[in-house]
Image 1: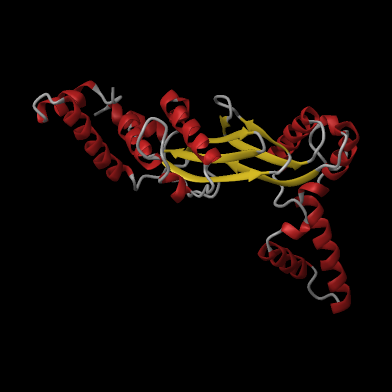
Image 2 (image 1 turned 60 degrees about the vertical axis):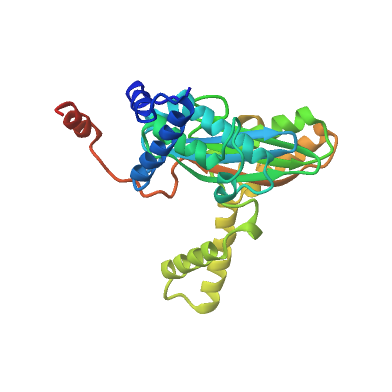
Length: 294
């Protein structure tokens, strides 16, 4: 009923004089204790997921301590359910989602706590984001997929259009595959972080130090334009073979004829599992050997 181990269940029933409901509560309280003990352990593995429903899509990341957990069906169900909660929620920040109702009862936070007790690792809902369009499609692609919609890299792309839905869906998936591979920083130059632009300008200035001011200004201006083409999705050469070396913008324009209407990329989201998390280095083989020795 609870998914807890046999000895834990026996201890719970003993502690509550055989009262089943009280024993369940006892186990849940024990789960909270276990979760607190594991909370300071680094969770950088797990799964990212992309879910789409109609004109809305979400990406979520749920972390675990080891990659073994990603193949645990209970963990996969947890990730799927959290994604479905995010699909229906107006806000998708982790704090808001944690307080939302979880399928089957309780909150998302409680479901994670219970999973920690059952699976035995620190787990956490790290982040979630959503994209939607008024009319059109949201497509998805998941790289290194473990189960449907869950893997190591999850991408969604939103296309605003009144065109043929099948054509739009195919294009959205192709573009999501491009984003997974090329990892653009923004849709176009206007979306680049000003701090990123300033860092690039500083690097160009340092590399060309000593040149006259007017020459340096032109070099920096040209360099920033080249950089933007390399990291902005619309200017990147599409990685999908069906696009025959065209830029993403050119590929989208070409598809407008087939779709029967203008197409606008409203945005994209790309989650790579564990990106930005400081992972503790360890000798896993040595840890296993040590555990085996008792």
